[in-house]
Structure formats: structure tokens, C-alpha cells
Length: 398
View 1 (cartoon, rainbow, N blue to C red):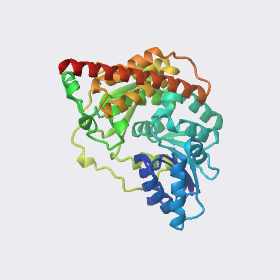
View 2 (cartoon, one colour; view 1 turned 90 degrees about the horizontal axis):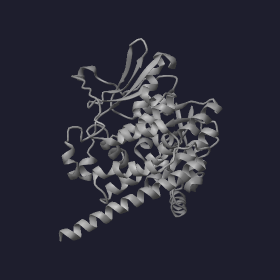
View 3 (cartoon, rainbow, N blue to C red; view 1 turned 90 degrees about the vertical axis):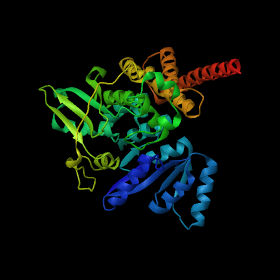
View 4 (cartoon, rainbow, N blue to C red; view 1 turned 135 degrees about the vertical axis):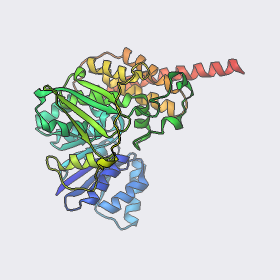
């Protein structure tokens, strides 16, 4: 029986993880959950899974959850809150495996502390490795514990790498769907609406990651994540646009052989792979080869989607650059979602913030978070500048 802690239990990956657990009750047990702000779903999950610990975002939400659990006759669950509560969930002594699925840097400290506590971690939060990959991977090596990718592309690479040694790898190929604007001319980018950007052709994901997929920043983050997970330089990580999303990633070996991983586009499969590694167990997540009609591949257009180029540049420099990349992107995407900036303004904000941030080497999570704070402040200033410009234009047009 593997005992699981889930950081981000109310998000899409968290819910998919619980679906996997439900399908294999003899293999997995939920022992702690970090649920964020969704108290209603946290209450349902606590009732269903009876974990030892549940964490929510704020103290008032924790008090509300305690009252609701008591009224429902659910006892024996410790309810905690805030960043300290998330760390408590991640380091629960009973947990063997921690699923890190909190979007953004909010889950960074808890993920790092889970690694420090000797837990095996399944990473669905790419921002952790983008912002603090050097620290997290170094600590995992010290602990002698694997970091198992849940992100579908890196999970696919992990599977393909079982077919050879790392010194036999020539290149990793990360596939990209291309997002909803693969065939949209740049001249139309000024007219892109939030609704259009959230209409991903293949995957159902949260708002930020869906917008990142539309700008290809998501693929840029995956390049950085792959560098850190597999200890390879950016020049050995390539992106290829594959609209069908049938092949999740490929590994090219020095003899010219290429191994590809194909499967259904269902996040439960990479979750199951990570939870059961190094074993594989039967499931109903089957892929029908008869449905495979054709496979299209093309190189990404980095002029049209500059976020991907910005990510490669940050990956080469490392340190504070990748932290700023993630922080500025989060602020810029949020600003686009609330209508403060246009779609094509997102890379402009990011480029400015990253250029102003020194690379440097970060020695602690505290230092990482300090750089993150400064980058966010810089990004908010850039967004405010766009907002003021828009206001001035609107006034002149009246």
C-alpha cells in the first residue's frame, strides 16, 4: 500500500490523482491533502478520503472546514492552513509519495521540504523546477530519491529513457500541440480574446497553463524542466510541433534510434506511471492504433511565438533568469486574463523583466522567493504601463 500526499488536491491533476487512487484502492491510500481555496471541494474530499491532514489557504477557511467536518460527524482530521499547512501536508510522516500539483511557485517550498524529508515526489508543477530546479534536484540526489515527472511530456521522456543510458542520448524531443493559434497570422494576434486563448485543441487544463500553451511558454518551461530533470543542456532539448498530441515526446539516441511514447491524452496515465514506478500495472487507459490516421510534425515558429525563444535564453543563463521568466509570465498571463493587456503584450512584459534580472546562483529557497518577488513587482509595473497607455489612447480616441 503506497500512502500519498497531494499538493493541489482540488485542481485538475489532484482530482485525476484521486481518480487513479479510487481505481486501485488496494494499492493506494490518501494520507494528506492540500486543497487551497476551494473549501467546498476540500470538504467533499475530506469526507470521502478521510486523510490525516487537510490544508486550506486561509485561517478563516480552516475554521469553516473544521465546523463543517464536525457537523458531518467526520472526526480525526487535522485541519491546517497557509504555507506552513501545505508544508505539513507534504512532510506528513505517513506519506511515502507526494504529488506536487499546485500551480505556480505557491507549491515550491512544500515540494522542496518533501524532498528534504526523503519523500518520493511526483512533479506536475513545472514551475518548481523552472524556479528552483538546481536546488530541488541537488537535494533529491542527496536523499537518493527519484523525482518522477507527471507532466505528460517529461513522463513520456522518462519512459523512453528506460530504453537506453543517459550517455547514449543525443537529443530529447518535446512535442507541442501548437495551441489554438498555430495557424493564426501574427497580424491577427491583437484581436485574440481570452475565450479564444482558453480554447485549447487537445487538453483540458487550468487557465494559466492553457494560456501558456497558446503562447508556447508552456513548452519553454518544459525545456527548462527537461534540462533539470534529465541533466542535459538546452542544446540537447528540442521542441517539435505535433498537433495531434498522439506522441507525447521522443528520445533520440546516438546511434540514430528514436523511441517515442504514444498513449491516450489522459493525465491519469502519467499519474499512474509515476505512482507505480518502477512497475507497470494493467489499466483501462488504452490507446487504439486503429485511430492513428496520420502524424504531422513541424518546427516551432519562434518569431511568431517569442516566449519559447525567451525560455531557451533563460535556460542557457539559469539562476535568476528562469525565476524571473516564470514570475513575469504568471503576472502577464493574469493581466491578459483580466483584460489589462493584450495577448501579444505577454512576451513584451516577460522580456523586459527577465532582461532586468541578474542571473546569479541561488543558494536557498528564501533567495529564490526573494528574486521571484522582485520579478513580480517589475512585471506589475510593466503591466501598469500598458494599462496607462491604453487609457491614454482611449482618451485621445474619444
